[in-house]
Length: 116
Length: 115
Image 1 (tube, rainbow over the protein chains, first blue to last red):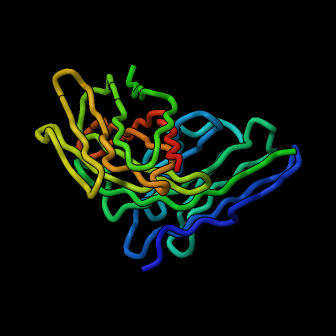
Image 2 (image 1 turned 120 degrees about the horizontal axis):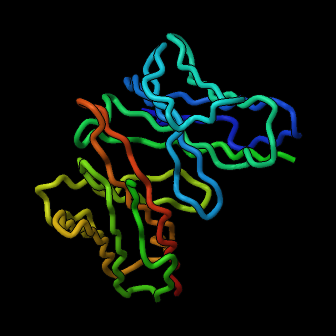
Image 3 (image 1 turned 180 degrees about the vertical axis):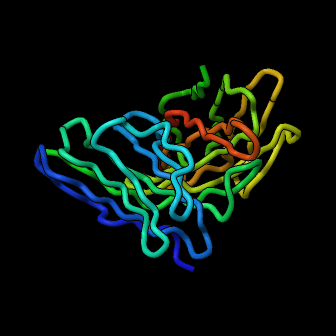
């Protein structure tokens, strides 16, 4: 049973370009979470999705960032017109159910975005 | 404001020694507390999950404690190994509306185990 798969592991973009980060949850998991980790900082919640639905996007910047989790295929975190401040590690996590009580959360290895 | 604070920020110990990492939180309403291990360049891996009613929980050489009254937790590592070198992250889950929980992450304690 493969774990949470993220790609690309490393992505370099120039300012103004678009970045697309993909996440395939563990088999049987329908809940996906995206987190951002800046150097020397803790992980910060961005968005929580179930298949075809955004459940909580309270951590997403209002502009340039969007996320989706289509019926078929991986979840996508899209960053338009990237700026240097977007440089960070973006982690995806999945769970078989929501995080009620002791729901276990499984993380991918992260996608490291560098904006030149 | 919901916050999770960890201490020390970093720690260096010799192989074979024990150590204790601290976590204080102000998260409410509290649901559960988790400890994760994050190796450099990797994703976090769960060590323990503790609910309100649990005081101590062990997982191999890791023992976590929780005092829900003082809102403190500790992670004790016994007989450290070189492979224990990593960042240890305390994560507190807050209950928001029904069954939805939100995780608040500490910034981690960076542990270096030296031979």
